[in-house]
Length: 144
Image 1 (cartoon, rainbow, N blue to C red):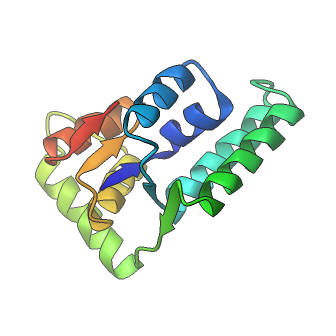
Image 2: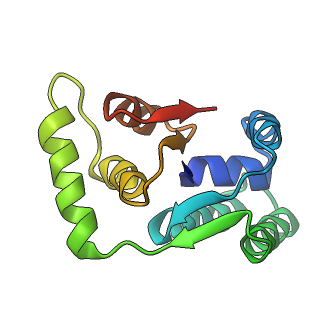
């Protein structure tokens, strides 16, 4: 099972500097459905909206990317899964306790990796360096 973070979703949908890598990797996996938490999906949507307002892309590209995200969900390529707060925060605290030390991670990075683990994912796809490092030391296979 593969969990995607917001950086992967945005790259694949908006086509930023990592977009080609994201699509190439995902197609190589036969467009396997990606598990996402509600938080990762919200972060992707927010990044797309912010990209329009801060000039990274225009409104048409933002609208097209948001429509692509919705279409991917409807077609089953992206599966949003719920994780209760009663599970996610203890899981995040465990990650923090066991893996924060010489290497530090932001709270949201920890929550994203904990979410992937709680979803039952064995693979974590991200372009975020801190999340990639944490997922790897937590025992997940990191892609692309």
